[in-house]
Image (tube, rainbow, N blue to C red; front, top):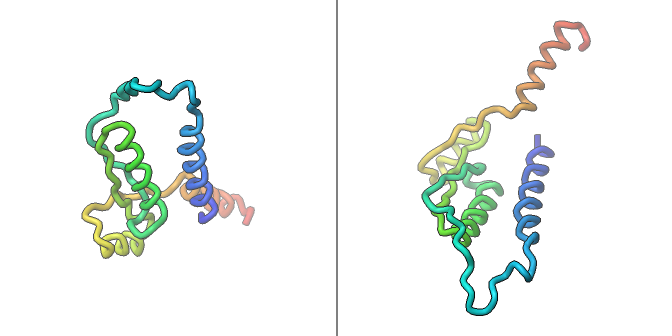
Length: 123
């Protein structure tokens, strides 16, 4: 579970900063030229991890960059995490809303496989 979270953060980090590095000097506006409008406006909410975790801070940084580059109004919302304890911790940290985090595919599949192995006398 912890390895999955680390890989998820690492993948997101690589995608965000990898795509940012895809531009070249030729793409930069010449002196006096204005960059073209992106056309990404409006208000959006991005679910992150619990307010005390790394996902929340990373999500906040992503929102700041997106808002500066696009003019959109992107804000973060703490998801509260997958357990009752992490949800309570997020509420105590001052969250005014919680987004439910459902079980991952891996967690659901693990339960199904465990049941299958028990029924097939593999365990």
